[in-house]
Length: 203
Image (tube, rainbow, N blue to C red; front, side):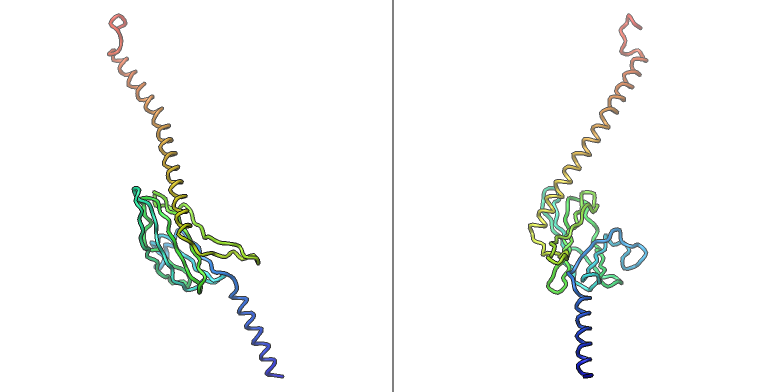
């Protein structure tokens, strides 16, 4: 009887442990990084790796894909662990030339979770996505990211940057046109007051 009770208790504990570990992995981005801790100070941003709700140790594969002056560029990113389990710091400075998509993938066993981070021409994070699906039981499950996903994110970022550039040019033109007219009018008034533009009969 005692043996049977122990077996039942062990089974209940195993079930509890399984429930506690249930759920998919997740990855998230934290910006700005905490400047008051040595392991996160001066990081470009922080990366959280989760299994369900718990921070976990994981290898982070990190690559940046960008377009600079019409040319395709790729570079590996420096990601380092911090003093907190499941928290990683990106040590590579955010690129300020061109348009970039940073692909950061963690693996919980064989299950990947990828964050796609868009960096605009100013070196500013403009968008973060974690490509995912929803399971039948309601879990938001990160899916494997393909090269097509990365290319799509980069094209979207290029379109957004181009639109932003056009708006900036239009705004500068709208500001400079009235200013140019005011300056021209002021110069004309000065010349008239000096008499250089008036006919002899009116002087």
